[in-house]
Image 1: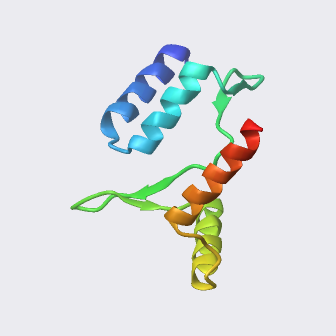
Image 2 (image 1 turned 180 degrees about the vertical axis):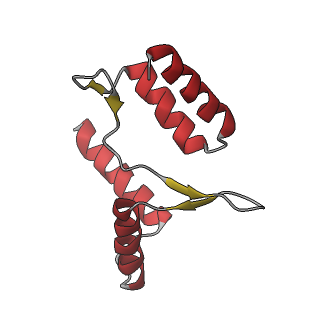
Length: 102
C-alpha cells in the first residue's frame, strides 16, 4: 500500500469510529510523534490492538489480554479491601504536598 492509500484508509477508519480513547491515542501519537518507524516506514503502537465485534445495535469492546489482566488485578484488590477512599487519598496527597514544601 502506498502512502496516499494508507492515509485514505486511516482517514476512513477514523471517520467510522466513535471510540474516544482510540481517537485520543491517535491524536497523541501524531501530536507528539511518539512512534517509531520500521524499516518499511510503518509506525507501530506499543499497546495491543483493541478488538470490536460488529452487532446490529452497538459495537462492543473486547479488552486485550493485558487490559483484562489489569482489570482482574484491580477487582481482586477491591474484593480484598486493598484500596483507599477518595477522602483518604486527598489527605495523603495533602500530606505529601506539605512534606515537599519543607
